[in-house]
Image 1 (cartoon, one colour):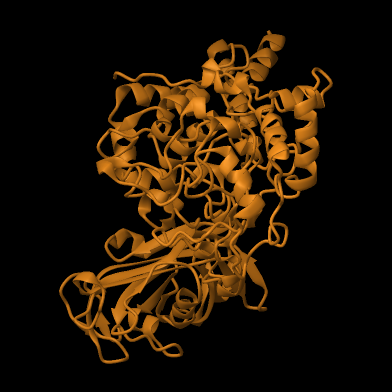
Image 2 (image 1 turned 180 degrees about the horizontal axis):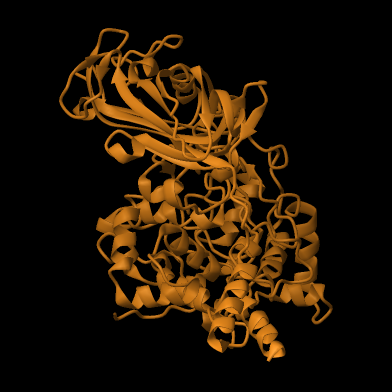
Length: 342
Length: 248
């Protein structure tokens, strides 16, 4: 009898659910490549789950995140273009509006410490707020969007599944989007296979790699192919856009005309190039560095005197850059667009 | 007999599971905020006020963050309360009264940050008072708007003669988060069964100087971090005054 009571006591003190199969969302393991540095994003503060990633994917492709239900995140961030906007110089938005910069490609965001061409956004979680609320992009008020999600039965149940029952708030919205974006990683290009001794460069690619290391790698640092810095790369000033670049964020004249150094991964798949999408062909980019540098006070010392590239070097560099195309990434079915009917 | 024994054991069982049986020696205290322009009570909408440069204006929105509240003990040591964030908003009467929990004791001053500390400006999506849905977060240049005043003035050169003062910025020399510390005229005693209350009078006109005199004819819009926003924050650092302490 006494044993029975002791048993009851122990049972009563147990935390509920110990004997049941684990309720709640299923953890989602994100595989990180061994040859990359430690991610900047702290996954332990927003642990990805199967349900959260699926919810984030639905949100990413749902045009109802925009004011007039026409523009989803995936509208401008196309998978086949490494989530850049293929063939579009400037970002598009609702009501036939245009933004004033090009759509950046999206991948390896876990390693990025700030976002946008000018680095104005300091955390992946709040990055989506910018396109959602920008009048030239999705043009929606965050409060209205949260109310719309709360009124939607399907979203209510998906949010409950990912984050536990309760009202949908902006933190859950942003964390779900981050969970999906945390799965958009590109580290299986031919370059990576060569690095991990599973493949070999062709002679042209090898020659291009040597040119890259000598002339490009100072800013486009391996293995992410960007050093995350902001630089003035000598682009002739675009007087129609009057874009001050990073100075808009820091108010420092030293940052005038400086923009993020973009990653070169998947670069051949994501034209046009530069913050204003002015170059549609990668050879135009080569020519710019070789002979098109405009001198302004904040010009980066590395490009100040130009980076001469002969026709042959340009050809070889092109071959090397094609080894940065990650076919498993741009064809990854778990990242592809889903059509949303209800 | 047997059922009785069972109930008794279950009671013990329940008590054993309770985390803490010792009552905590804590008490509530309240911070009340009363918004004025000089001596007149602030009324949103059509009431006309005059700034220190004698320019008339009306107010449509007035809100600011209070966070990181601390109390000063009688021996002048600081007692930092668990960090909380509150958006005091003239349009929401209930937001103008903040209820806090503090350890029992006697205190001679109150301090807080007017704004949101830098760590919460760089930590991603937040909830409650810090939810960006409240319109107090800059999306294009991440960071909280620490304090916001909107209105109209006939001398404003902005479209529709609006006034827009969105003050923020948490970096470098133009950090707009201001540390406020105010001595209470009488000490306040916190403890069980007590609820002392301190009433602050918040004077909106202090925003426009001194020390940095703001004329609406030349400055009607501030909506980015930087020197101009910081100068306003240096002004509004002086906007609080304790007008009443209820030590009951």
